[in-house]
Image (spheres, each protein chain N blue to C red):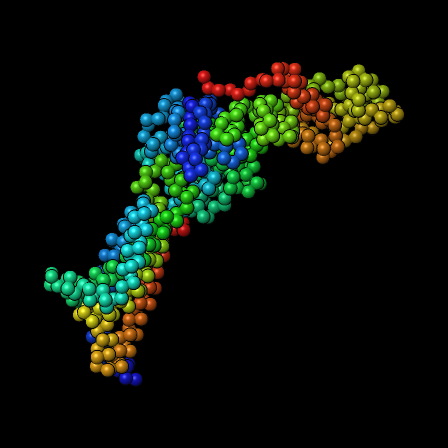
Length: 387
Length: 214
């Protein structure tokens, strides 16, 4: 857990006194990722660097797991904090193994212990130790280098990690891959992490909580969904973007919005039955046809059921695509647009029908939050501060 | 050819003078490296001192070698070494300071800021950062400075013959005073060849000392 208590940094420059960070108060709970977000010069990097004292605070305290770090020796403080920077910073004159082992070696681990750790960590990021341990940084791609940068920070098993735009220097395609891998790693290791970014999309994807900074002040500190649905002021609204409702889509899964009570028909049922069930259930457009194992095999459209006669099996259209319960709504919306569909069936691993997700269901779910905030008092205070 | 004959008949002398010449340069530049590299590292800590030190070193190198030898005669006579081995070594040591100090200083300062920050941030002390990162990365450029010093001073040592230090310059000075073109040419070519061979050998030493990852 990281606690910032009135943390302040004031610089004396030729242009006068600059308050880079103004009485920052916040707490990152154990095992969570907090993204510090904001435009250039807002104080997010200054705040991060005060935690490991790359920048010395002017006033205020930093507490790690409840302990005040003010009087702690700087070098031992830093050895207990994982640090990942944008420029990656792998030492070119050392092998990957030596790079990863550097902090454990500095704090006095035995050779066999830190060598084993280096191997284990490389495996965790899908880099074969047999190949990569003895390589040099200049023989690795940018993405591979930053993976090593991340595990170097984890090598001594620090309780806390600081990351300063760590994926900024990676190309966008690899960046997504590394972000996903990092989230997977985080689910296993559960470190408390402070992560600086200037990219709202990265923040929404990676953060358990987002802290928005402007001109040295902490403006809003909330979960991504709360931030997107209730931006505190015009600045935050502008920063999260006018498409913030769409950004929320990636935070919600199909299982949260799908209708689980679905009427269906079998191939053997008549079209008249299909029409009847559609009317009973209130389906405007279509009804799904399932096989004996509850697996969807196609759909019967209302227009066909009204005008034709016969069995469903003979008059059904093929399903265009399906979704899974854990898919995020952004993927679902994309599929809907691709396949010109207003609804999609949701199936389990075995292919059984679990429910249906509709466009209307999605907009209702997202809109519900906005309805409740509109009826609230307009000056709702959304800044969560440490007590 | 006269010159080849001369070489053949005087191989012993040539060998002795070459060895003298090499040992003079090796000792002088070796000592210069021992003083120059630590100075170069030290001045990276302070901009102002760095400017002063580099200025002094560059002024030293502009003093013509004959003049420098001349200046040292009265100074070193007080300890009985006005001419000969000692002034020659001291002069070359002084000339070698600029390339070595400046290359060391520049190399360490040019270690990328990202690496410096990474080293600080993960918890290295300044000394550890110097030892494990900055110096290993600076080796190629420092060695280049040493090579510059060696090649330049092989030429300077030729003039040291005039103050009795010995070396291949003896052939050149005798060739001039005795109007003997053979000695002159052999001396001059020997000095040049020595410089080329020294440069090549130090280049391969530099390659061996450069850390693998660079």
